[in-house]
Structure formats: structure tokens, C-alpha cells
Amino acid sequence: GENVEQHPSTLSVQEGDSAVIKCTYSDSASNYFPWYKQELGKGPQLIIDIRSNVGEKKDQRIAVTLNKTAKHFSLHITETQPEDSAVYFCAASDKTGGSYIPTFGRGTSLIVHP
Amino acid sequence: DTGVSQDPRHKITKRGQNVTFRCDPISEHNRLYWYRQTLGQGPEFLTYFQNEAQLEKSRLLSDRFSAERPKGSFSTLEIQRTEQGDSAMYLCASSRGQLNTEAFFGQGTRLTVV
Image 1 (cartoon, one colour):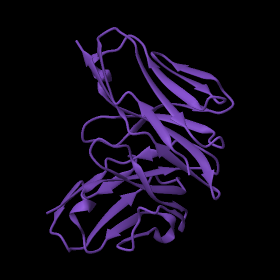
Image 2: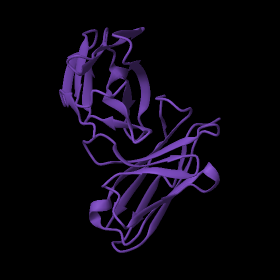
Image 3: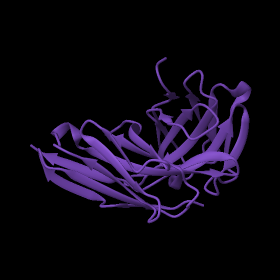
Image 4: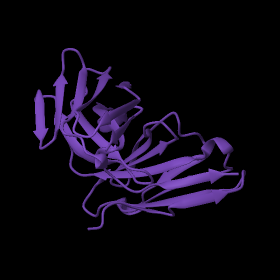
């Protein structure tokens, strides 16, 4: 099955700095890569996703890049703000027996200091 | 449309008791997932339904766990003879369509086994 590794586990930045979170995946058949933000006591919420036919996608201060050859993808947050503080999860989704099952990384706790 | 709803939000039970959680997905979503999340970890896949059919089950889902989705609408997850190791957040997610699409998560049910 799929295995997703995520780094770093904790990331501390000053407000206004950029933050980068990196993930690798093992199954070359994976073709959908969502990123989720989870705030304390809440369920994960999708913030951006990318499909395997695209190398980069941007949405305001957030961007995701995908390198299919190397099997890694990254989340970039620019001009970080204190409200960006949360746990971020990457995921990779392949077709397991006909079903698309997202496999998640272990998460990155992002702390943005004002 | 109020999103994915889970009930209860919190459950404290004694070891050996049975518990049941409910998930109401977004109404037009035919796909439903159960995940388990422990502190400091990413969501771990438990089981997946497409409409009323349970198509995938993780090896994490021991014989004490059972899930149903009658009529392809809400779903229940039952844990029999709970153990302290079952303490976790149980997350439900739903999505639509036949291909890889965004999974929307509920707020989760936090289970504590004492």
C-alpha cells in the first residue's frame, strides 16, 4: 500500500516569513495529493490539492508543487500569519482495488510567532 | 448543507463496554470513510463505503470493530469490548463521484476508554 512521509514534524517561523512542508510517497500509481489543515479540536479541512497531471498550483498565499519522478510534493505558505498556526497534513491517494483511499502523513505542527 | 456531522463529539467509556458512533455525510456524497487519529499522528484509514457497500477494510480494523452504512446514507462504527488502546479521535469523511476528489471531514468523535 501507499506510504507517505512528511517533514518536518514541527516548524516555527516568524510572522511574514515563508513556510515549506515536504512529503514523499511510495506508490507511483498515486495521482491525487491533497493538503489538509487541522486546528485544535476540529477535523481536517482541505486547503489545496494537486493532481498528477499538474506540476504546480497556487491559491493566494498557498502553493503546492509536485515532482512525480522523485515522488515528492511540497506545500509553500508565503507571508505567514498567526492564524496559519495549525497542524498540516499531506496525503496521497491511489486506486486500491478500485477505491480511492487517501493515505496521510504524520503531520507538521506550524507555529507562527507574531 | 451543514457538512459532515458526527455524533457524539466526546465519549468516555469503561474498558469492556461497547460503543457506537454515527456519521452523517454530505447528502449527495456516495463515498464515506472512517479514519482513526491518535495524538501526534495523521489520520489512519479504517474502512470505506461506496453507497451501502463496504469496499475496503484496513488491517487496523480488528474483529471488535464493525461499520455499517444502511441505505447508503448515514454510517455507524461500533467497537465491542473496548480496550484502552482504542482511545483516539474517530474521524468520518465523505466525497462524491467516481474519481479522486476532495474528502470532507467531520469534527470527529473523541473516545476515551478508562
